[in-house]
Length: 402
View 1 (cartoon, helix red, strand yellow):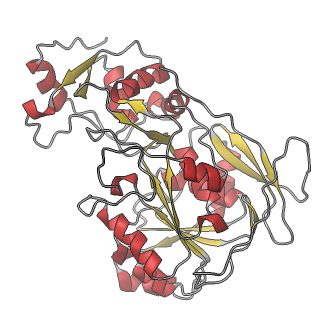
View 2 (cartoon, rainbow, N blue to C red):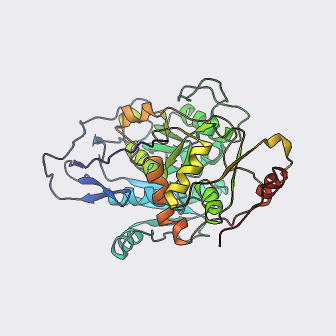
View 3 (cartoon, rainbow, N blue to C red):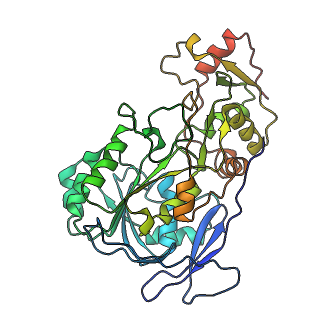
């Protein structure tokens, strides 16, 4: 199987007074934005065309932008931000010159040093990010903390229900943009793929609350943007996507895959997702829009197993196929992905946001392995209960690697 990789671009842009002047470069797989006092108009630079944000449908102040990475410094509230998506996004935002405050319950450390982050860079980031402690389910307390805070933009990374959003909107009447992390899981199952942003939503989806949130934001007349990732992977992933495969590969176990293993799906790297979130900030084209964000290429279930093996330097995996209807796994999960074709078109984001995924699948999984699982860190211990049930029924013996 061939996996496509996108070569990163160097983007330099500069704006007028009090605006962030930045150079967007690849930084160990994460785009790093460095600040400069003057615009260096070199032949290798790529300057985005100036755009102006319309006041139509906006109830807050102006959200001025002259280039995709040249936004006036904003006072940004991030709901969540201490794990996975927010960890990378918060760095991009602070490096771009924005003031970032994380709203969390305070149960986890507000910042953590990345595996490939220098002490100097981490110190700079941790000293610049701010924290507001509270529980977003305590609506009265949330309103009290946000009232008069003057935040310009909200990045809602962990919102699940529309009711959680209303107190934020009520407390920030001059809000310029609400950027919401939704999910491609909202789409109604269809025989026609890939899913486009205009496809029908599933009223019975477990992600229905995210669909309702998008509808609420639209009805409230807010300048909003919603991002719908498919399966997200990368270092610090708290969902057992690549980690599920890595555990079995490391243990030298067969990898059980439902059905034929030819089900087609789509994975997107968290660092590419973070860049997409940055791209919609004060972007006129992103006003009141939804964007699918994921990897460039689709992949089969069997292909994911082989890509994970290649990324971690493991031998070709032994893949065993099973019929899920033959088993009662109880609370054990036999496979980390939904057993169906599930993938989206990302063409709208590529065209309107000038965004491209940097990571091909093997390259992205290698990044995840090298910076996380390969260092001995993971979120969940492996549970082989379902695996053993499958292997026993198939008459397979497990020979664990020494």
